[in-house]
Image (cartoon, rainbow over all chains, first blue to last red; front, side, top):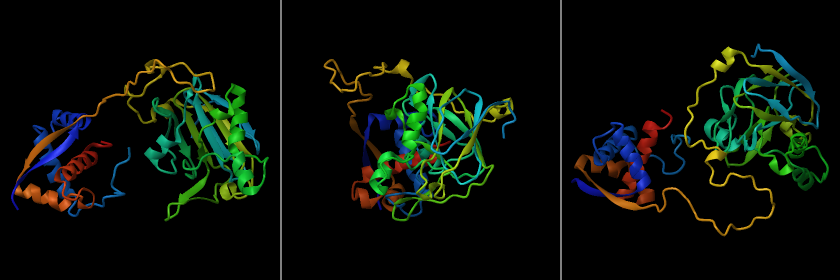
Length: 60
Length: 301
């Protein structure tokens, strides 16, 4: 499988959360943060999680 | 258990409730006399009745049966701990069911006049000028409830014993309103209605120091922060012709963020992306993963 460009549609509030996460040192930039999230999420979830009613979803 | 000074002691008779001024640092003890009695509990900020205990926030944080070590929170936008559950000998409480009402007994049982928690609450808090419309959903002490597999809610019998008690520590000055649940023809209090004992103590310094710290945030707003902060006195709702919407962060604007994934990363996306929802939309699947990862990584930490 080849690499690919993937485009996310994000609003200003979602970008603010990403930028704040970058600012706290999680990754050098937005793209790196997204790749880190993908890699760590995939490592934590060997199989696709249930789409609805994920029991691991944190409480508000 | 509080070892502080006893300030008040009374028996709450069946069919009654009592509005009590519970100041910061004081503990209200609700104690079983015969056992098996549900007690509905509400509270208001003593200095601003518009701030009141919110079972929704409390339920969201602690689940359907909060107990020792949990807080009773006020509703948004105040959203702060009002009461700390300092001790709870049974841990059989409910924040799922609303208070029972006159309509319930008339519509289901054909009893137009029957003890019910809404009206008992209303009558008790009337001592402080509050109306029946000011009663809100209660924190139900000593009430055994659950959820069936099909999602239906149920109430069942309880096994609290004489001497079992719950100690509620006020973190702000509150008007506390406990009432003996009026449901004597339901399982709630094992088909009976019995007195309970109320006591108020002063919390010790050690007890106050043991309350977990909750950091105050600017989003916990007070009337001083409201655009409109006077309490409406008229019942009729009329449009304000001068109203101009002031919603935050609008308009919500979407923009594209393109990320280059290598072959390994793209394979990961194909493996864990939620195809059943996003189908071939890789961007939406990746967005879901990013914010799901964020929740797992940072929420509650």
